[in-house]
Length: 186
Image (cartoon, rainbow, N blue to C red):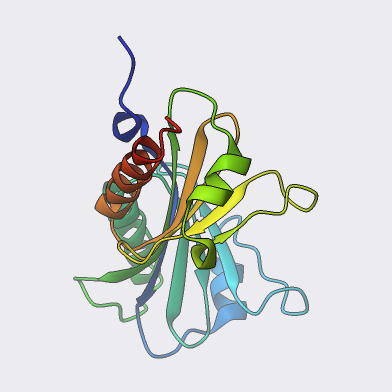
């Protein structure tokens, strides 16, 4: 039984931002948190790596945080909660209810068979695609709805990036599958 492309979807990375407070003393923070990384010359924030869930929190002096590496919405929420508790444990005034804004969801999918990128490049809407096989082995397809970028590879593998919610990737894959079927390329 062949897996439907939309059932092969796998979140590879979610990047989200949050505001946890108005100011953080980064050198003090880095010295109080085990394994925190802070090198002002290399990066303007403190990097805190969590193991469970496996997420990195980039913490800035402005009180803004970028969370990256989450593989699900649940692990993203859990990571933000762990960070909030860690900061509260250092007597930093952090709201009990922290919220984040998803900036980007990167998802992979598999069409289940190889595809001819040259034919797709000719068949798809030309002002929406970039295909230069000498530069990059994939075809870049910019969708309007949902507003994502899909990288198509000859193997039939896809990378969907720019999504703001998991459903964006599913809609993008369904659109690609329909477009390819309509062109007789899948």
